[in-house]
Amino acid sequence: MPKTLISYLICSVLFAALLASYSLGQSVVPTTISPTKDSSPVAKANGETADVDSPRKDKKDDLKRFEVGVHGTIMFQGDFNVAVPAFRETGVDYTPFIDERYESGIGGRFTFNITKNLAVESELNFTPSTPTINELLQAGITPIRRSSGGEKTQFLAGVKYGFRGKRIGVFGKARPGLIRFNAFESIDARFIVPSPTGGPPIDVLFAISEKPATFFNMDVGGVFEYYTSKRTMIRFDIGDTIIHYNAQKPRDVNPTFTRHNLQMNLGFGFRF
Image (cartoon, rainbow, N blue to C red; front, side, top):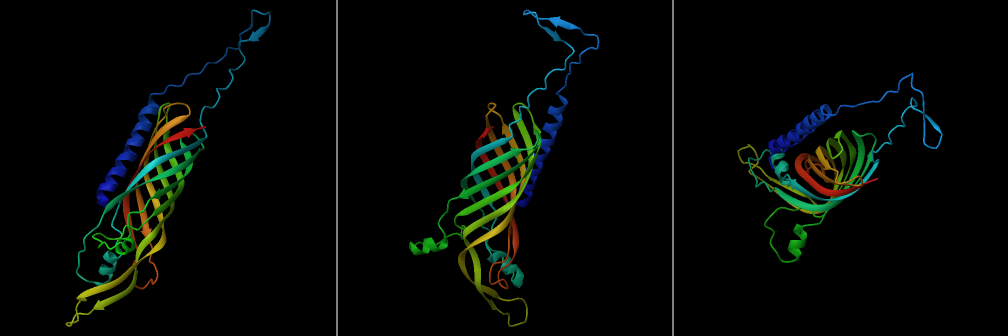
């Protein structure tokens, strides 16, 4: 998915969060009851007296401090074919097929609400493997697409901040973490076919294999929550998952690059 579209979606969500926070905040008019200094005791039916100028008991804080939830997740992955940036580094005039795909999985989340507006949370997602190149070859099937990266395990931990009302909550989030591919493509060797005229290489050949690899990723986006009851909630996340693919070994032939990925979650949670 184009980077500009992802950026547009994220900006739209964050703008909606700020607008909702301002609008809902303006609609709440707090009221207080102040006792008078001249108030006198009032007799009860049992003969006891109550002082009407005694302050009201503070209303119990109804903020649920902890949340646990499960969700389904889907990621529209930007192309992470290592040959694409590797070709560019050698100066070869080559535009490869950009293989973008989406993969779905499941995940869980734990949140601690510091205040009604601010929370810290962690999330763990697992995406089952689509067939890897090695698995297809072993089954006698000729691969028609680039490597899927295999199974993916994603961990995120960070903060969310925004508006929380009686029924809905709208937040922005920023959560760094790690993502692990169990079959990520890496270049084992590179063969450059030089130009006889001394210009850019005619072609570049790569020997590629699939290996486990772990990368830094950052989730930036928005959250919408609907509180179905005092103890339950539905949550929708949308964000830009930025993955930094650092160079694998041997590092002199493997490039470092970054990709933006649209990721969405929809799930159910408990508050306590």
